[in-house]
Amino acid sequence: MTSCVRTLTARLTARLRAARGDEGATLVEYALGVALLVVVTIPAVGFLTDESTEVVGRRADSLGAPDLDETGTPATLPPPTTTLPGGSVPPPPESVVTVTFSSSSSTVQRNVEWAATIGFEALDDTGNERELVTIAGQWAGATITTPIPMTCATNLSGRCAVTLRSLACGTATSVTFTVTSVSGEGVTYSGTLPVVITVNRPTGTGQNACG
Image (cartoon, rainbow, N blue to C red; front, top):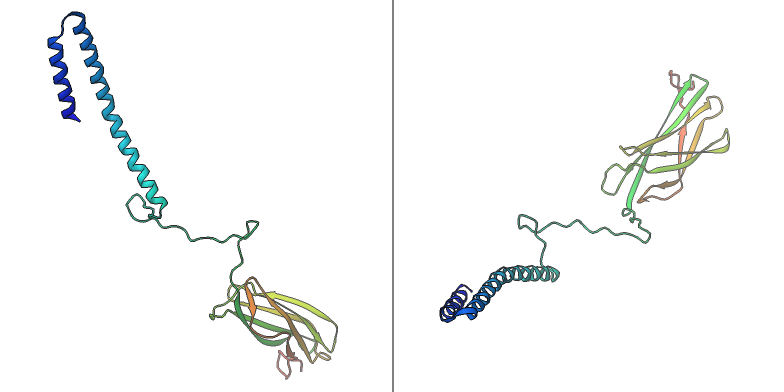
């Protein structure tokens, strides 16, 4: 580009030296116009070169080239999220839960009343404690005319308990709790229902017994 400008300038200079009068002035104006056109054209060529490079880069990206961050390292994209119709997110996958239980009894007032307690522990299929597992059932017994429904939900340690109080020492020798459902978000109970658990009245002559 520079050599072309020099050649054009040399030719115009030779013509100017041969020109006379008004014709000379016209050649001067023509030379200035050509020089101005050359000065404007050089930046325009550079600008078009940059634009072409950017267009090529965008087309390469659209063909699957990895995105780069400011350091030139491929950018890490977030994991895809599945969304159900209506904008809701699907629930977590089902996990199999095993529920174990232990029973105990104690007196509230010696030789008068006693209480029955059943504790539950929920573990998932990897052996970890599972919270927010709801265990529902009902109490029944010889002195209970209408079944008494009761539920509990496991805490962070995967445990909860149900307790039935005010059982008469003289008449209520035992009570039962029937587990009718084990539920929770993403929970599948591993056992079969219903499960019947029996709690016997505390016996003996000790302080915590219906003697």
